[in-house]
Image (cartoon, rainbow, N blue to C red; front, top):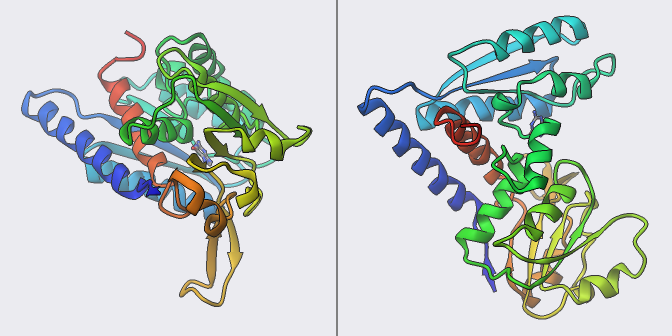
Length: 291
Ligand code: GUN
């Protein structure tokens, strides 16, 4: 069994990006610039955005953080997005989700210029991904595809089961795994799927992205399968210093011994997401998606 090291792979990807920035600087080019918009003081969002800004510094990008209080109006936020859309120094920006209930996330995401949508959430980028033309791919699916490629996991003709049909993970994963050159036969399962256990037992590759701690058990997985665990459920624990423990969607102790490859939680898919965002920003600055 090979443990897929997302932390190490993310560090490698970030050092590759940093090397590119050094080259850009040497040649007198424009330093990639990412902005993040953060509304309110949600603990999770604060942590994620701080990590994104820190990662920008690490690879040599310019970064800008724009903060609003919880009571910001939708109109004010739309104005901010319009300003960022027109800022010629910015290569990309993200509006951290979730947003307060009085603001339509759909409206905000759709107001972002797709050419600067390095989160890959805009319907134009989703549509381009489905059509198989260059697009900004959202961070988690991009990170998973990168792990599959870098670990040289065979995908052609393999039966792949994706559990969970969310817009940010399950559905895009089902598209990316079935695209030309990857060539998996994909089954997308969800809460109404019948005989899930039997479907999983036939899978060469399983992507567990349903958001239920330790859902995938040993009896659902065949010998030699590749298992990608996207779950992150935080539970209280008296065994850790922080008092919290992260659980994936996979019952690791049961599933891992049967696998050819498996991602752990933490240290698997999670660390790849920030590197993916930086990569999209670099692609944007090099005009490699929208030429
Ligand atoms: N909230 C949780 N994950 C993400 C992400 O990848 N991008 C944005 N904008 N918000 C998030």
